[in-house]
Image (cartoon, rainbow, N blue to C red):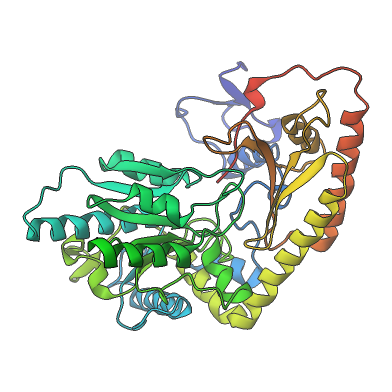
Length: 457
């Protein structure tokens, strides 16, 4: 019997008279694999096309050799390092390559780990900041009950989670129209002896801007010379960590600054790997407290581990290594430059359109954002434009900026590998068509708050 609690099955795939699959409970009898495949495949057809998803930073395309490697290795559990010793060796090679890319003083000796993504990496970096602060305070005979952490009001949500989950006071340096990213003066006004660290975002999710890590480090250096306070920096380079070394190689933001103690990056963003991989590297081995590392014996050997997850596929680590060898530094430069060129083309075109004012043009990471010009129209908003673009298949988010700027709504396009110049032209064509349609409306579109959803991952 077919109802809202059942999914009908194609009659060609019936078995034992079973014509529907229950939605919310396991069926009593199994189904033919072809029937299950087709059922799920048909449902997934309703999802949007990943190539047209301009909201996500996450990689949606790799080449066919990478796809083949994915299929060959997805069944290996990364935590089984004794059983899969070559996989463990490749993971370590990736850590050394990234440490070297970020100018770690001793890339072959420092510590780093792969993670499920930057969110886990940020949690691990934050825990190391907290533990180092606690150990220092205990040596000084001072209390450890009121830790705080300083970051921008435009920080990624994971840092708010970190502060909440581990009972740390978050202190925000609010961005403003005149100061669109965390400024050194704002940082100095927030820190004190209970500050476990300052988090600088290198590729702000809202706008794609780099925060001025070098200036923040210099301000903290001067603070230490005046007061003795030694406050470390963690750089959340989820997006920028695989952009700046290639497109802005002279920009100082990484372990060239002694105050930067740890850096995280998403391998599945501009690292160009399918979803499920992040990295965190510490400047020196001693920057990761030894008592945070667990040694597990029941995997067949004495395995050191510092993760929030445990079992996970090794595939993404191997794909990261594949990209490092496949592309090299020159290849990463070409891929990232192509994305940035498409971003610049798009920002220049959007700037010439009557309704829009470009906020960021993709000169840091390849992210373009714009807002409606003040007073342009009262008939439609960027949320309506987002809906209209979806009729062409494009997923383009509109959202408000952080506190003190939440009255400003912007639209964002993340340009990543696979968004070719040809697609940029097609998107621009559809953008103009959407604007023409909205401008033709004689009355305002009724406001629906359900549509006011920020897509900022």
